[in-house]
Image (cartoon, rainbow, N blue to C red):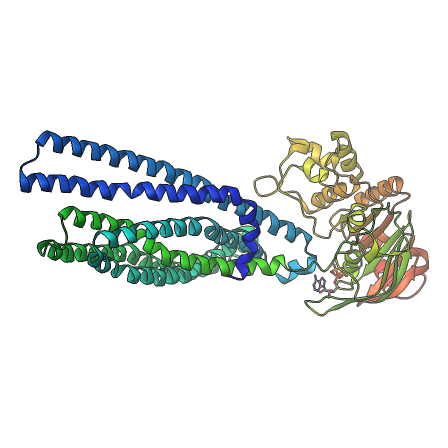
Length: 586
Ligand SMILES: Nc1ncnc2c1ncn2[C@@H]1O[C@H](COP(=O)(O)OP(=O)(O)OP(=O)(O)O)[C@@H](O)[C@H]1O
C-alpha cells in the first residue's frame, strides 16, 4: 500500500463527498436488512395460524399486508440509497481519475526529449489510460464494496448469532472458502487479461504499421507474407483470449455452487434444530437463507477487492516512476527578458545518453542578430544536434552555449522557446485544417496573417487551389500534402510566429531551387534583425549565408563565406562542384 499513499491527497480533496458517500452506503445496507426480518415475521404469522388455528384469519391477512408494504418500502429506499451511493463514491473515483490523468499529462509535457527516447509511446499511453484506470478501481468500486461488506458484516453477523448461534456458525463456514477462491480466480483472471491486453497492443501496433505502410507493402508485393504474420498473431490472440474465457467461465458457477452449499447447510442444520426445538419457527430458517444470499456477494468481493488493491498498487508504482522523474532540462527561475538572438557556442561537445554517440566535438562559433549561419555536412555529421542544443532540447555535455551573452541554462526556458521558430527535418503536421496548422505558431493570428505567412513560404498558391483552401483538413481523414508542400506549411508556421531566431533543419530539401530561392529571399526581406541557422545538404541554401560551417563527424572542418570556401580545397568545394555539374547536366 506504500505506492497508493500517493492518492491520499485526492481522498483529502474530496473528503466531504466521500463522507456523504460512506453514510449513504451504510443507510442503504441498513434498509436492506429490513426485508429478512419481515419475511420471518410473515412466515411466523402463517405458521402460528396453521398450527394453532386460534387466530382470526383477517388479522393474519392484515399483518401480512402490513409486512409486504414494509418490505416493498424498505426495498425501494434501499434501492434509492444504492443509487445515491454510486452517484457519490463512483463519481469521486471519476474525479480522481480526471485529476490524475491531468497530473500525468502535465508531467509528460515537462519531461525532456531524452525521456521520450527512452520510453515507448505505447508505454506512455498505457500509464495514462490503463494504469490510471486500475487505480480508479481502488478509489471507487473497491472502496464502495469494502464499506458495503463491512456494514453488512457488522449488522448481519451479530443478528445471526443473536437469533440462532449454532446455525449462524454452520452457515458462515463456507464463506471464507468462497472469498479465498474468488481471490485465486481474480488473480488468474488478472494474469490472463494482462496477457490479452499485451497481445491487443501488439496487434494494434501491427495493424497500424500495416495501414501506414500499405503503399510499401503493395509496391513490394508482400501482401502474402504480411497476411501470414497476421494469421500467426491472430492465432496467438485467439489462444490467449480462450484461456481467459475458460477461467472467467468458472467464476459464476463456483459462486452458485458455494451459495448452494451454504443454503444446504442452513436447511439441514436448521431443520434438525427445528425438530429438536432449538429453533422456534421455520421463519428463522427462511431468514437465514436470505442472509446467506445477502452475504455471498460481499464475501466474494473481499477476494475481488484484494486483487483490485494489488493491481492498483502495481499500477500506481508504474505511474509514480514517471511522476517522480525529474525533467533533465529544468526552467531556471530567471525573469522573462526579451531575447535579441546572439548565439555563441564555446568548445561545445555533446554525447547522446542512449546511444553514447558523440555528435559534436569541441564546436565553437557565434552568430549575431540579423546574420545567417549555414551548417553543411554529410549525414550524421551533427548538424541537427546543433539546432537541438540551441532550442535547449538537450544540454551540452561539455562547453558553453551563450544566448545574448548568458549561459543558456540561465535563460528563461519559456522565453527562449517562444523566441525560436523551428522548422524540423520531417515536417510534422497535425490532423487539422491547413490554417490551424499554420496558426499553431501564433494561436491568435488573423486570417490575413495566415495568408501572409503562407505567401512568404511560397505555399499560398497551392493552398488556394484546394476547394476548401485554408480550411482543408490534413491527416488521416483529410488530404495528404506532397513532401514539399508539407515543408512549406511547416515554414509558414515558423514565420507567422515572428521569432528572434529561426532554426531551419534541412527543410527546403523537397522544394525546387527556384522556390527555395524565393523563400530565402522573402526571409531575408522580413528577417533583417533575426538570427537564422540553416542546416542543409544543398549549396543553394547556404551560399548567401553570412557564415558557413562545414561539419564532419561532429567537428568543424571548414568555416567562412561561400566565396572563401569555394576557393579552398575541401568538402564544401567538392559539394559545390558536384551540385554545379548536376545542374548543368540537368
Ligand atoms: N536522439 C538521438 N539519440 C541518439 N543518437 C542520436 C540522436 N539523434 C542523433 N543521434 C546520432 O548523433 C549523430 C548526429 O546526428 P544528427 O542528427 O545531428 O546528424 P545530421 O548531421 O543532422 O544528419 P542528417 O543530415 O542525416 O540529418 C548521428 O550519429 C546520430 O545517429
